[in-house]
Length: 304
Image (cartoon, rainbow, N blue to C red; front, side, top):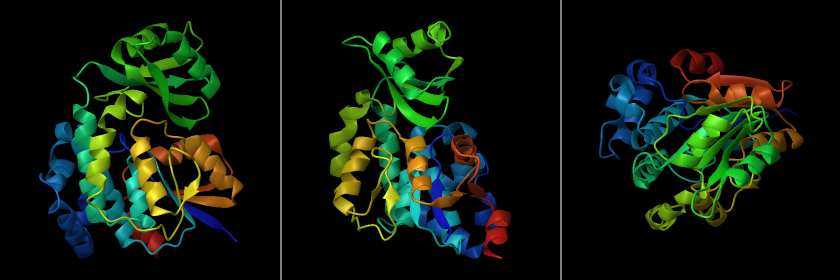
């Protein structure tokens, strides 16, 4: 029997006009997005449709992506065995798995984004993609460059030959400058506002944890493979604790996909804007089936 996992993208998947067709063409989609919008202190749909500059800011990107993903999910007739999200995508995965409502998810990621955006003054921390090396090789370079006060660490373990590192700006700059001589094929600085998924982000964990306590979590109806462990979870308390750890821990995406394939998953469906995760899964394993659903046309194509 075919096993299917749903994938939900994270930051970097956003694009101007995202979910606009769902909003304009589907009454249920329009009402769903308006309901999410009513839970936020800013007009997320206006940013998604009209304001590319603001859409690129973490505190707005996060609720925008979760809004799009859950709006697509709400329209789909689909059965699945697991869910997995990339970084903030884990919140849409938790909605799919029945752990939280979409209304709660957008509020949580708006707070998460605001905390992440303001944790460090601009220019003190950042991220870069290292191409052509494996995890032990990247970790060795990070250990070599890091000092007691200035750290750089693996942050997103995406697919073979693509690992994102995170840390102090000066160390990211050093890696970008010297990456080739250290053995990398290329090192690309990322346009992000902070050192996400590094130990530097631990400073916001208490405030985020206290914010999470306002919301009701349920045990997962469908197991969610969490970023921090690359293993499935259903217990609501465990899920919550790992969401806090996720702020300052690596996203183990490649390991999560490998685990799902070992469990017999042969079909992956990416739900949300763009097709970022579909590309990563192809690099991890070419034999699985991958479908991306993010537009009205794709929703209708699937439901038929």
